[in-house]
Image (cartoon, rainbow, N blue to C red):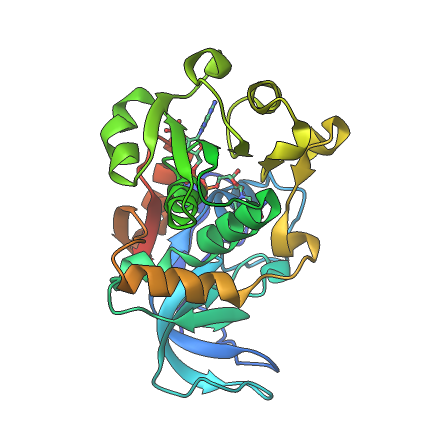
Length: 299
Ligand SMILES: NC(=O)c1ccc[n+]([C@@H]2O[C@H](COP(=O)([O-])OP(=O)(O)OC[C@H]3O[C@@H](n4cnc5c(N)ncnc54)[C@H](OP(=O)(O)O)[C@@H]3O)[C@@H](O)[C@H]2O)c1
């Protein structure tokens, strides 16, 4: 098969698109013929050698993908060859999705309402946002602040919190105000001084920005969860790291998001869909930032 890959750590230019041994579905896994596959900050950090984890080289990046099942591993039920699914690889393997064929560790049926690029970039944002909102125990009528609201995890969290009946305040760069509002949030500019611009919040999801300010805003570290600041635990904030740290990743989140998509209540914003051979361009876009949603590679 052909796959995006790199055989040394470095800038986006180390990425190539060429032959790579095909993976096969092991126990509890399915293999898909990939239609679209996401590019995430974890992929760019690995490629650059900025991550604490260093995969063996050559390495195929990518954790999210959508496509058609062509192998079903031992012990797997409820899915058949030919089914259209979206999901994520075994995250402990640090990649493998940006390829013609990918082996998924968790998945759900692709909703008709999502395009291939939307489905291909969705899984870890949905899983992470679901996990964080579960930790925060978000309920109808609560005011939930999402800092920041325009990226993959943030834009997903805004919609899923709205679907739980919360009033959502989304912090992002000023030129993303319309975008954040279109997701169902009230917009506030991100950056220092956030507590002075927001009257109150019952809960806060920290993705970017100042964790200390979110604790000040809610008045309770237990009302804040972070997906990025490992030091948060020292302040009493719940740090949720997901499957990379060995915690279970739920398929329930993907199934629920797929149902919401069919009802028109969830979409995965795609900032740009880039052909797979141009993966270096996709990594550069993610590293530049300022995006509305996910960058996705397409077949
Ligand atoms: N713990 C977990 O399980 C888990 C899972 C998935 C992802 N993550 C992590 O979560 C983070 C977000 O992932 P993603 O896929 O959503 O990335 P993304 O799409 O690149 O979004 C990152 C967002 O952070 C915003 N940001 C940058 N500086 C900020 C600041 N000072 N204040 C507030 N927001 C700021 C960016 O805004 P601008 O670019 O517009 O400035 C961007 O919208 C990454 O660090 C990723 O590694 C953790």
